[in-house]
Length: 383
Image 1: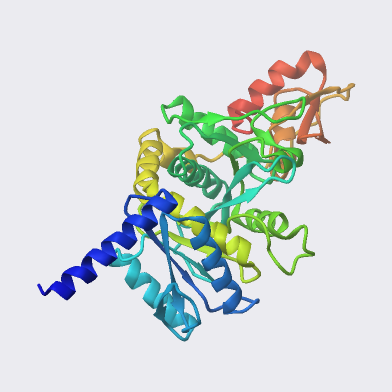
Image 2: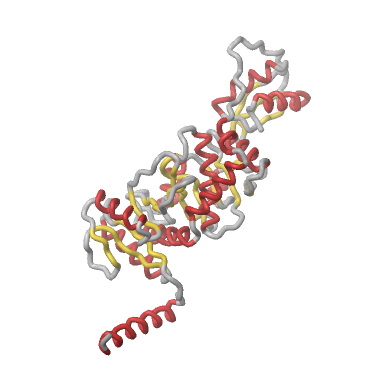
């Protein structure tokens, strides 16, 4: 090696050492990509987010995939969305980047994204499980699997014992029953308690605003709406200015860390998504997710999500004599409410249906409550 080459090498080494001293980052940098084409705000807005992320994260190397723009960031040239997604997948599979942020990417059934937002009440981070894609074609099964995805993502972010809440949407009570069965069978996780006086793991709108749980479980369509609301409630909706994006696609055997942005996401969200990507990449998200799903499967995940409630026979059910009903039995899905009432009638108990503060309820007399609950549990309508 010539003296000139040695001097150049030493120069490069000294620059790297000086940079490490200045930033406090001495380890190998995590490489995170971002695709630039497809934004409603133009590729320069996403580039601004990429450059912002680079300034904020000295231990991350941000690379761009897209058209050549004026930037100091390394860029892999691609001039169509199709080209940039192909390049992204190649870079991920070759391990040249650990994760990538992109838009409008299709995941297979069984993989859906885990978003992260900032709660307006207190600035706390809240994981939304899930936000795009679908974990299963059945709603309840999808939400149960979303819980696993959310737990894996939280653990990859360094939360050792993440607290789980279930948003009070259709299917919430069935999801709660399934998760309780898994927990009782040995799948280890922790529920949270609602901030409202009635408590419980089924969360209210107040809990969303205050980020009561670490992970809020819901279906991905509801999650998508929540992401848009949290990200753009200060801007009128056309520009998503807050949060970390719609998150990584997570599944039981998914091997890539691909983070999703909305086409309305602005530079601050793009920067947040890159930071989020680096965080879950460092935390080995794919391996953590694989382990989490294996633990749930060992506890009976497949059988739990396939359990069907005992069907109510189609014959006419006689309604017992009417009496005053003041006791509420909660935890029943809205679509199952009429059938649940018939189950109670068949047990010889007069019941009515109603809507309580936390959702659908079966109303019975105080002296009939225990017997009615027993009938509903036996038929699979409550846990």
